[in-house]
Amino acid sequence: MNYHRLGNSGLKVSALGLGTNSFGKRADEATSTRIIHHALDNGINFIDTANIYAGTKSERIIGQALEGRRHEVVLATKAGLVRGQEPNARGSSRYHVMQELENSLRRLKTDYVDLFQIHTFDPHTPLDETLRALDDLVRAGKVRYIGASNYVAWEIMKALGISDNKGYVRYVSTQISYSLADRTPEAELVPMCLDQGVGIIPYFPLAGGILSGKYSMNHEAPTESRANTDPGFQRFLGERNVSLGEKVSKIAAECGYSPSVLSLAWLMERPAVSTVIVGATRVEQLEDNLRSASITLDADVNKTLDEISDPFRYGEPFAFYRLP
Image 1 (cartoon, rainbow, N blue to C red):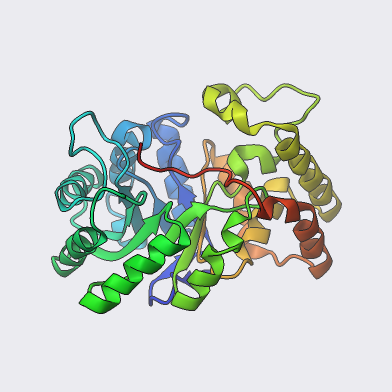
Image 2 (image 1 turned 120 degrees about the vertical axis):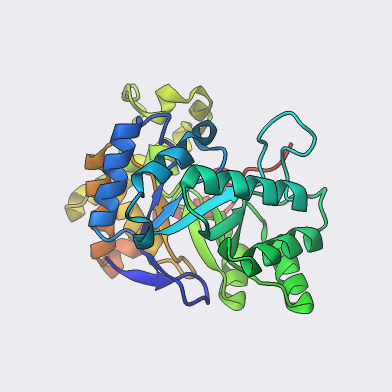
């Protein structure tokens, strides 16, 4: 396993990280625990979750699975998206951020998280309030590093400016949809991150499975796929996306890799990317994806992947989560 610095920080994270959105939902507790342990046993040290994943089940499962192994993990969670109907059950106010971190710590069975991320930009809360609260959490020892998620470039840049001006701790990373099927971050976010030393943590690196080869215009989606377990995912299965997936599958077959491995390896080599988080509902999925962290793509293969995905540098992001 290769390890990279998270942005300009001194924290080292595995090139492949473990996403846990499916834990407690598409993967039961026993399966999720096996996946976590297999990840740790094979060099993955970055585990990413959130307070809303599977209605808090993801954090609870991780907390159980990491008993006795917490020291092996760079543990990341998030807060900021909607948690309930109450007026303060969302956003990045001091009230909500501090309350949700305490709840996450209890579920994760730990007294600190390594990376605490604001899940999306909150237009209703002053950034100074959010950043001061995060700075206080770092000073209290409950958080070691802070990151953003679903911020556009100017929002992160504004946050960094406030932190620098006020002497608050800075965002060291940002999570955003980024893949062969979504290269929109390359227009503004990637150059900003390179300039400011912010690490990128791509989510949906396989475009929800479209880049894994499981979808085809001529065949029905597999029973266990996201397309069948999440009806809302059908909107992504247009001809443009599925056609790209088929092209990636063809190139992967010629290289002797699975489409997932090829797609992840391409993304790991992109500028500013610190770790690529990918989910799994079976240990076998994770085992295949692990290969991506130990290969270097041929220059011609990289060029071909760049060319077929070039149209995906424009238009709307594959996914982007904001407060209602």
